[in-house]
Image (cartoon, rainbow, N blue to C red; front, side, top):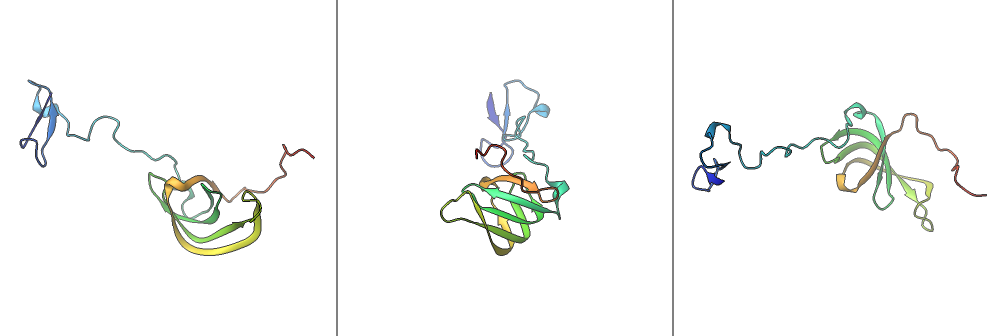
Length: 127
């Protein structure tokens, strides 16, 4: 194997085997499997209300305006649901208007549509 092209500098660098036909080699970085695909298909939820949970326990609800392959989200008309100070896993009735926000995909743990979502009693709770 050797690096060919412009002497190993700049554009035009290719990986090829000695004696290999140059019309069939691939550019560095275009190896098989390098193509990124979306983790989630959120296209059917664009312009619909979604609820998003983040690492750390924050929850927001807003209208999905855009997303990318890294699940970075753009939400409009966004509302944050405030948590209880004593129990960080419990949400209170208090809300905060955020407006237009960008959510970093590495912090997103859950994205679900608001249509058809309702709160139910915990079936595993011992009384």
